Image 1 (spheres, rainbow, N blue to C red):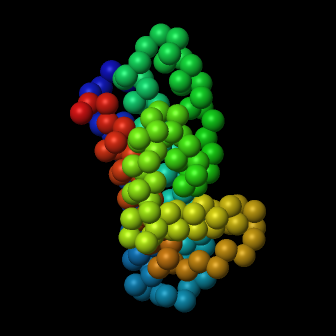
Image 2: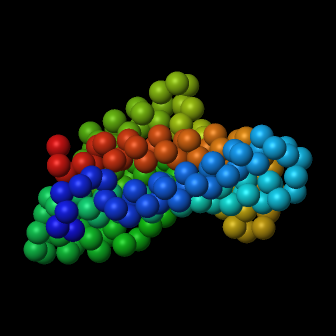
Length: 167
């Protein structure tokens, strides 16, 4: 990680891939709203949106630790970051709390703004991801999937801003 760019390339690539799928679902939604293939793309978009948050947060935390620490401290911190969990609000708050309690409280306030919109939508996205992964009825349409992709971007953008070691 010798580069001084932020966010890390891995996160930029994850965002680009999510954007490509998001655009595809949005374009197809405008063309043929009842198509069966659209519902499968919507499911994929939910899974990828949740994965985008999960993987991006992990990479951002790893890059932050890489740039802000060294030696045994870096090795110890990196070993804790290898374990990823579904990016539920509770899981993300817990991760941030390991860095700093104030940072965790700021994130909770961010999630709770606007009548807890982001907290509810992030929880819903993770729940639907799990339901899709386990073959259960997920009852989410393409328009909602596109909206949840935006939620994934909002949450990840918060992490990009707050964990930027260059500022």
